[in-house]
Image (cartoon, rainbow, N blue to C red; front, side):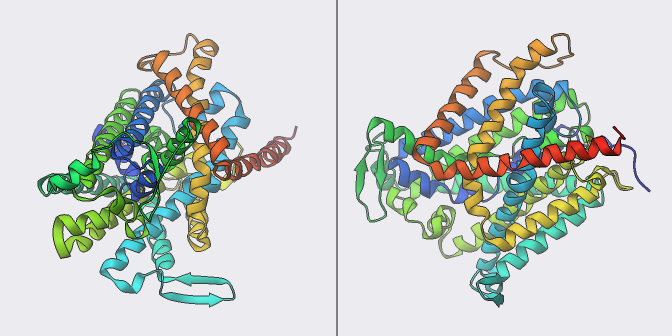
Amino acid sequence: MEANSFKPSLNLLDATMIVAGSMIGSGIFIVSADIVRNTGSTGWLMAVWLITGFMTLAAALSYGELSAMFPKAGGQYTYLKEAYNPLIGFLYGWSFFAVIQTATIAAVGVAFAKFTAYIFPFFSEDHLIFQLGSFSVNAAQLLSISVIVLLSFINSRGIQSGKLIQTSLTLIKIVSLLSIIAAGFYMLKPDIWNANWQHAWQLQKLHTDGRTESYSFIAALGAIAAAMVGSIFSSDSWNNVTFIAGEIKNPKRNIGLSLFLGVLIVTVIYLLTNIAYTGVLSLQDIANAPKDRVGVTASEIIFGSNGTMIIALMIMISTFGCNNGLILAGARVYYTMAKDGLFFSKAGHLNSKAVPANAMVLQCVIAAAWSLSGKYGDLLDMISFVVVCFYILTIAGIFILRKKMPDAERPYKAFGYPFLPLLYILMGLSFCILLIIFKPNFTWPGLLITLTGVPIYFAAVRNKKKEMGE
């Protein structure tokens, strides 16, 4: 028996934990290595995280107006459709399904497996389970798929199950991160700290052999943009809470507030974590961390021989909770698209627990396929450009909707309008233009994936008209 509609059952704490929990995965423990290699200084390491945090907070504050205007499932897909047209909304939904959400779920799942291998070596990437020619399957991939299937099943049994996992695990990982930060400050090494901050704002390329290379002014901007790819990935998925608006109590108030609180909490934690890194590790140690696992290297110094196990357990909790939030929220987008006749019709049904289980199964299959492909990491680098482009379009939609729907109810208005939304748009455009110039490989693949949605959209529209007998 199907349910007719979603059941509002998430309070402000639950919604805030979905925002924070979906943001905190494995990125904060890894991407600082690449940021340091690109910027070569402590000040610019912090600046990259601060700029990303500011942009994310500005976007979250702007989204509050949109979430209050359209307090229903679908989130960004709905906002783009209403501000522009169904095609733009669909292109977002298509890229979200094809890569943004599903490849992120795969990447987070494999990160969970990689760190599980620290405690249980059986799950190592080096442990091959099956090989046929150039195609192989390792234990880490199988564990990743198992976790994705398990979380999809749990979330298909009702929002309460996913809510319990999300809220409890997010609280645990926030407390754990704060503990690492406190321990890092306690173990701070003055000589390393002073050396790291001696030339804090000297922006330069830091090679793994210790050599440094100066940038021209334009190249320096490109280096900052390249460094931000990692921090933006680590700070993304904050908007997942908007996808489940139909299940949040008092959504006109609580969605905007949860976006602000969740993003603020994570931004502060990310900055403090990086400060802790620079108190115990030299810049060279951060840049050369084995497999970029800065968190592991720092924990070995902070906690001694038990550091690896402690950080591995913490990242397992972090990535498990992160994937729960991604899986829980993502299916609601496909459900809304199906209701509009732009996705597989079966994805537009709720099961007896008021969950879009069919959409969740489809998401599970694609995420599992990305886990087996091993290409999710490359794609996530490539999709950062597209993600920011859609954020820019969405925030620009606030200006459009104020003219298009001047009399619409707006229980909450974008903070700092028009200056803060406009500042985000300018910063986002700068990031995208610099990537086009300096990192074209990070731009065109994501655009191609998005544009493949154009013929699919028109095919879906034709099919919809046929079904309606037009």
